[in-house]
Image (cartoon, rainbow, N blue to C red; front, side, top):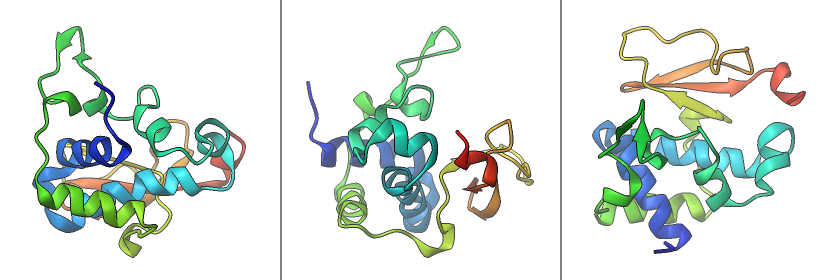
Length: 147
């Protein structure tokens, strides 16, 4: 079944950040939209401003994988049942809003640790900007511009 962008985005928000509260979900939605609107680098070249491409970009969101480490991933976007809050945040982001607290972050991850790594992803294209609940958020470095 082909989901609308709104449905797909709501499912991703629920899957990636439901336990992070409203700000955590808005932060994750903001990263997706930052990737869609960044005017340079890898995301600009590959996504062409397309939210669906941002969500489905290979190896970006664990929730878009049905198999992780050779095992079925039950927590994937196809198994989500979004509630109104997830649609509201998707609509908010699709309307062009982003959470200022994450600035122009292009990446996030949960380190399962009290400390965030200085750089993410490996290779130094992003540098720590902030942490919201369990997720660390990273803004692009000059290295990213060359991707």
